[in-house]
Image 1 (cartoon, rainbow, N blue to C red):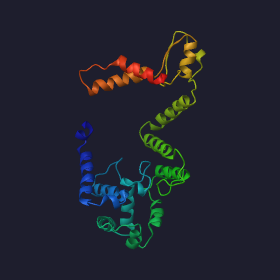
Image 2: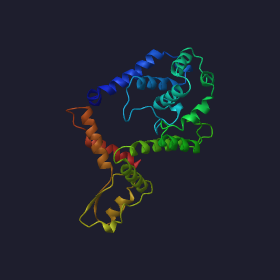
Image 3: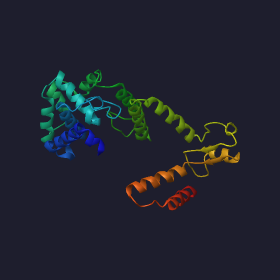
Length: 268
């Protein structure tokens, strides 16, 4: 809420988007959601609510027009500029009447939707991050940004992770963050040590932010060498206690109860 208070233009953009939905008044059960959200974003951008990070383009988050929102809006701006200046208004009317099918674009522009999409992909509004995500989706069995019967198991999770990486990498220092995360994740997944136990001086203490039943390899190695070591359950309990006291001001978190619950879960 503080962010919206300090950024009133962002609040205005959200309100415009949501008010566009009120004006649409579509029968949601027969309306493709990507056009519903795409037209709402189209209206937002058309009224000038855009900036360096909120703009009409396809991105890692919304890589295909079927993703809706900014990508569908960008596609509509492209069609509007090159083929039919009234495309948004005409699409809105079709959707309100419940008469939409993808053939609408052929009727409105003389060109099939899939061909329009191919042409759009050659424009700057179709970013490299969107292209990368779509390439990954296709390799995992997606078609037009949507899963199919041939979609591989675990595909949604892999795509979500790739999207997260792409978004973080666009931020200042994001590439370093992603690289560090991937390195630490590989240590966790393979139960590897960040460095050999003998490289840790005898008087040093260690902390492994990961926790698991039986302890991690790092915890076991340092414990065996007589060094002080704690795993991630300590931080987990501390984070839980801090969150509890934030939600319930003036009430002390039952730390020992929380710690006992974690220990019980790790023994299960």
